[in-house]
Image (cartoon, rainbow, N blue to C red; front, side):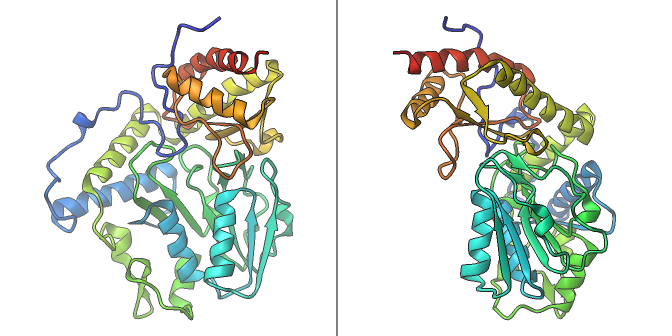
Length: 372
């Protein structure tokens, strides 16, 4: 039978992601609007975003955190164009975004000493193939495949190369071993449901040392430059952004950070994401026609949760459209480059009660679409 109870929030998009429970645009301060981001007020708000980020995530004090242009993509491109080329590179990819970094390294930067270790959607490459004398480029969580790195145990403390990690759908939902990561990037619009266009760049002391000792052979556009006269441009990591940021988007991010604080910080954010995944795990265990794309539970994402169905691609599209039309689940189709299926965002801003409410609708929609 057609269910009657709908999720309070049907927003399950993997980016921009659902706003936090109780969110209201009217609650954001507006005194910063119309003011320069370089004013005392503007810089203080941007600095607060950096300071609160480091505190909530437990980022080491000697790491640098900066707000940079162009979302996670801009932050990661910035890191690659500044740091790669000093050593051979090992790229690990298992979905579209990792493949994109490989394309940039091989076809745009045209670096010669590159190994590309791949795995198909739903699987993880053999991380033991990494040579710790090489730089490594990888995503922590494959947003379009639902496959994550289970931990950082495979990264040696005495590595010689840098670890460059795209962690945009992992930070605030998974434990990040900061001592194993030299470059980490993410965007506001993922786990905390912030607005787009801004990226976060986290650098270890080893990454800073690379910036100061290595000069790439190619020219760098202004928005990528982090070094001047051989020294790190420290102001980038103190609230002075390279280009003009959206101050209202920054207020939105500060609101999300304040909410994270109010519910118990990082442990509670992780717990909420895990609880959402657990609700789906219980459903999949008793439902024969739906399957996790990530079959290994140890590598299964608790944010971008991806499924395959016992249905044709056209039937999957009809299920997605039907649930959208009913107003119970928006933006749940798999990524355009991924196998046909469903993708539900399960990050901390999504309530487990909404996951539980959508499950009967999934059963109903599947029955409606696949019945003879």
